[in-house]
Length: 167
Image (cartoon, rainbow, N blue to C red; front, side, top):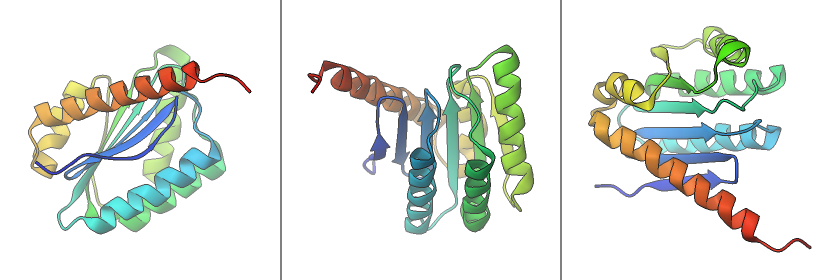
């Protein structure tokens, strides 16, 4: 089994890949630096692949939509990568008004892209994995485990950052 790769991690975000899936999990507000990193890393990952890839974005309940300029940069990145993307699964953990804002912002990103790939929004990773797995020739259980591993890594990063002495 090919190794997993952590592209970037901090206390609120992780970018992680495994085989043909690129996974981003956001537990807080995405900064312009997070967006820049995701754009560059996604493009590098896609460039390395010979087969179409899947992209998963998991957004926690406390996250807010990115700014208009950040959404434009993400749209441009997906436009560049579109020929190599088999599908995009968006997992929104938010409820109520916040969830509606996130869905609206994410819908705009993917409506504005000239995509040739399907996009679907889910509430749970298990449902996203069932949908995306066949598109990238991975077992849904592998995708679920990828998500669980990524969240554990991010939790470890939060604990590590919290344990550091203040200066």
